Image 1 (tube, helix red, strand yellow):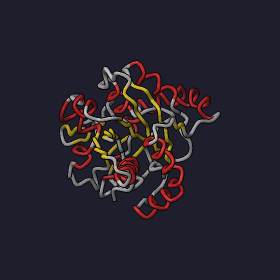
Image 2 (cartoon, helix red, strand yellow):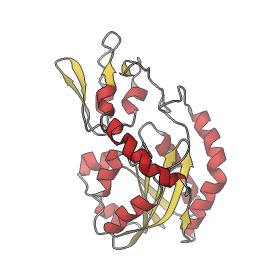
Image 3 (cartoon, helix red, strand yellow):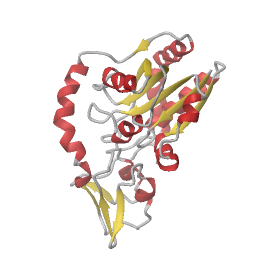
Image 4 (cartoon, helix red, strand yellow):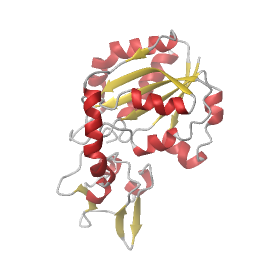
Length: 254
């Protein structure tokens, strides 16, 4: 079976599980190709149809921010046109619960001609709160997910419906999205750079998935295109990027 998995990973957790998925599925005689959503958007401007057409099924993998999709993922879905009822699976990464759930995105995908048949919630670390994340910690988290995750993969192979992570918290997600809509949209306003320690390496600029950071008159400017992924904060080697008065939260890329 040919599988195309499109993923967005802000600080590395989602990419970690996509790699696990690829290894597991290919050990069971399937072929999995991973596509970085931000690269697809930047390099091809949405020309993803060959990858979709040449696959038996496709997948989407993403972190959940404030009971909602990251902006970049929501934009990417608009590129998925004319699915012709192609089957699709979702892997969402969360620290506690997925209050976004499968139903809203199922309707979004259905409008574009895709059938959401498998949905899995992968519990991992919270990179906005955990100060030190390494591969050992991610592997420990994976060991807690491994049995159910294997069942999820088996259901894809068997073409059997699998919806994981459904509960009453999904109802609460509607309120969370309303409450956090403005704070997330304006998150970029809270970011600032400590010029006394910044080395002007520009890693934050080059690694921003939405090109939301600019250097203007020797000052860093954060723009509204920010997708709230924390990558710039996690990738700053000298801890120069701050959130209001808070300090950085190193992620798995370190």
